[in-house]
Length: 185
Image 1 (spheres, rainbow, N blue to C red):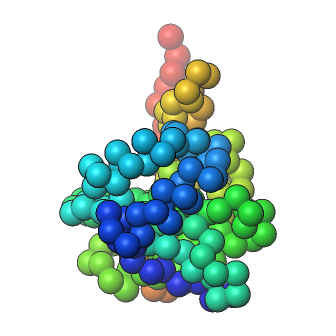
Image 2: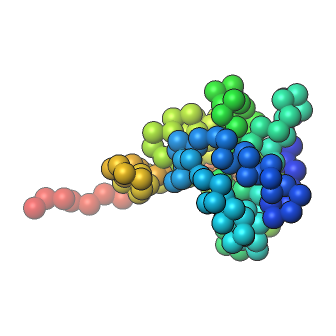
Image 3: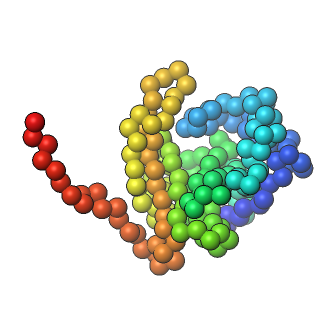
């Protein structure tokens, strides 16, 4: 499987394709699961897909064609984040690991950063598995940290990969039990 990233021109030549992609799919684990055309248009106009802090790419599969979008975010911070959206017809096929590995390779080959981070909801088991299969390490579990429109918040779970782990094919674990305290009343 060969995955490549093609830089998108959201406000220009890719506007209609992006609008179509975003409104034709449901993204159940995102803050806005079914964005309307006006919401997507507003996001394009305010630079949410392309500005100094965000760059968006089409995810291209060598056999399947265009399978989704990847936005690299917080690019002015020392640790970029990402937003990954697969077309619903390509979900559940095991493509996520290849996509995340391609994104990780791209970030560490083209940016001078030492960490790459991502977050998902605790109930997005498929994405959490993708993180682990891709060599990422769970770093945080923010209880009730992910708002759910019309529902109870769920936990936000953060994963990251370090440049040195990417370069060496290693995993640097988080020292969860670095000290203890007496909790007696």
